[in-house]
Length: 460
Image 1 (cartoon, rainbow, N blue to C red):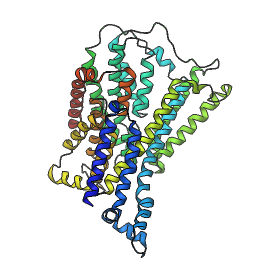
Image 2: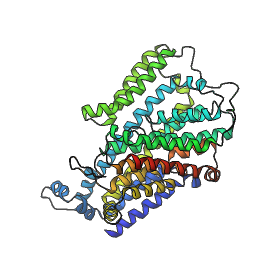
Image 3: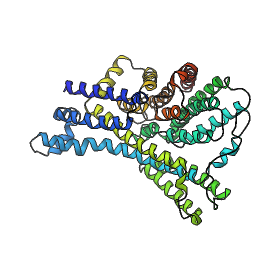
Image 4: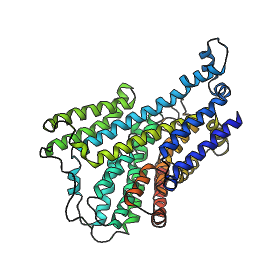
């Protein structure tokens, strides 16, 4: 059993390295995650009887119901009672992301954000930096990071003509996206995972992370503001999709925007009231937004004309890639849990280190070179949640470990930009050279993270 466990760990480490170096070998990380997710479960089945007896002895005994244990019985038990649990968890997050991202797409495809392009055409380069960061921070708190980056980069590429200035704003957008995404339960897939696993509640989570996240963004903006001088170099004329002759009225766009944002913030309340999975609330909000959008577009015959938008085609591909990637990662971490490796590591850490700040900082630095999604899932499964009612443990519901883990994963993923899919998308869109980024911005991101950690420590 030990040999099989070591093989599974070795395969996963190799896969994480491949996924994090996608820009070097150009192998799609979603493909790596899916292949690795299948391979590790095949390896798991080679010694399935021992693993099942280790982790699910009672359940397996009930499953057999007096029958004789066999290899076939183990395979059926793993297929029906072990693997499906992780697929169900992944689907809960995936359906939530599909619904929330589609809400944003509906708003964008109806021109709700077009007025931002005119509003953002300001002259002061430093004022533009703060405005674009605050706007990104707000949007990312409601929608996942990758979608927010695609939206904001599509806006600034239509406004700012200078590549040098766009690179600076792109870095600010990336930091603001990560910080906005990490402080709400619906802001990123990592925080959604925490919520789905019921280790956090949305209100307590946001209250604990807002100040550290906001401070990190502000410190980074102060540090890079020195590189901006004079005015924003704007395009002399706007060039964007302008809909057809029957575009929505201003009041209809405002109505859709209010409905979409209010609906997203209603999702935690829906879950608290009904105790139903969060994705059901997200799907309900999407259905309502779609119904109102359909009424507003009766003259345009639905969405046929609006799918011409470049943003729609881009996010459709990225969204499918993200779904497959997340599903593969969930299968990978699931195998790591079921072989007992994470239990062993968690027990060792608890008896030899027992300091959540060391855990968080370590995961953050690993997130700078490895992908933060698998590291977040690994950190979540290292320690069981303290279920004792009224417990003030660091691992209780809303304990500081879960908040620190999310915050450090978000900050760490920004250090080199390769730790998140959103960061890699930012590098690719603006063709930012990796060495140039390290020389000019790595230390600024690190100082901002340390400032955020200080605020986290003072507030907890």
